[in-house]
Amino acid sequence: MSLFGAMTTAVSGLDAQSAAFTNISDNTANSSTIGYKGVDTSFLDLLTQSTATQNVSGSVATRPDYLNEVQGSIQQVSDPLALAISGQGFFAVSQQTESGNQPVAFSGQTQYTRAGDFTLDKNGYLVNSAGLTLEGYTINPVTGGPNTSALVPLHVSTAQLPPTATSQVAIDANVPATPSPTSNLSSEVQIFDASGTPHQLTTSWAQTGPNAWTLTLGSPDNAGGPTIGTVNVAFNPNGTLASLSGGSGGVTVNGTGGTASVQVTPTFGATAQPLTLTLGQFGVAGGVTQYAGTDYALSSATQNGAPAGNFTGASVDASGDVVASYDNSQTLVVGHVPVVTFANADALQRQNGQAFTQTVDSGPALVQNAGQNGAGTLVAGSVEQSNVDIATELSKMIVAQQAYGANAKVISTGSQMLLSTLNIIQ
Image 1 (cartoon, helix red, strand yellow):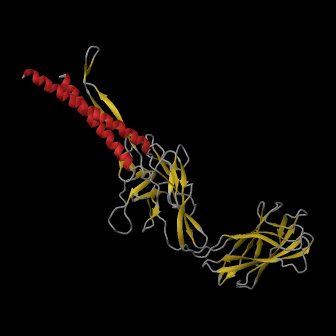
Image 2 (cartoon, one colour):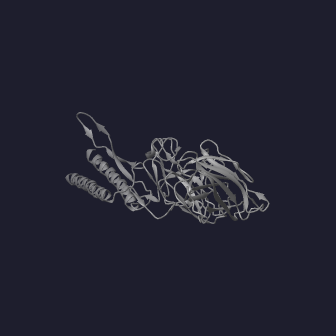
Image 3 (cartoon, one colour):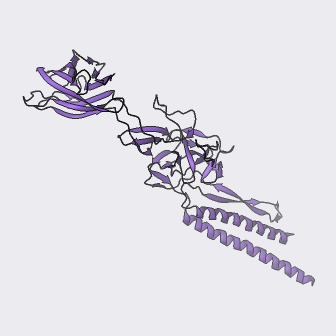
């Protein structure tokens, strides 16, 4: 009985080492697979009988140990849509169906992965090398914030960006305290109407007394003539803005709180276009100032309008915002990528393509912004490599090979001992 038991135990040892070798083989084969999580092997002793006076050989069983929470090395890549997670968490992804119909259909089951080598597919969806589509939040066009009510497959439209009419203009300049008679005290700012047509907004300064100026605003394309209106500007002795007053024509003073601004309304064609021109802060250095000098100096002029723009590409930043870029120098946030965590990520069910699905033992998916409540941070333009260490796997392979050979030797020795027993009878 003990001899047969020993041979049975050795057979279970062969099975156990075969299982370990299978995991080693899987890990070795995927040592270069982006986002792959390795599998270790635990051995369990199964008893038949064990007392103070007798021990009967039992067997050994194996159980896979999933290393889903072990971080792989993060490598920078040239793909602007690539993402890696430093710390805990996964990307939510879904599988596109192969119907070939438009719009694109999805399987409906959310999976989770660390494979963040995302690119845009032909339909404008962010997919990784396993063909899984990244899920995230869409953007509310009114608030500009993410719609956190549901995760959806993220889509980037390659359509042309409509033009934006200018509504805000800000200038940063210095009008000279003692202007030269030959000084050019005017400048131009390019603005855009609702159709994306460019126009020039002119600002002309005329000194009317100590620390006192008249600002004339105009546009060559203004339907009512090149001059829109004027406003009186007073400066403090230290060169900062003191007050705005006396708006005339199509200009009204609109200074509230500490902001010095005026409302100017040019008319392009038959359409009036109200603009807010910000000159800086009252009593604060910056914006428009009056310091010593003889020449007018425009440091910067900004405005928020733009012509129509053609799509040039997309990227994801470290905050998780998916940003589309256009050839008119404009960008648009079109989605947001959260990080999904689990109480027991090692209990997730493995799927094809370095993906996982939720189980009872893993706990529910917790969706949150990167870096919050234990979720890892995002690393833009990077991917996470496999967490397999080849040197360790080769060491395990040697151990498994030796253990397998030792168990085979036990079976061979047991067979010889049985043969010796039979020879005694003969």
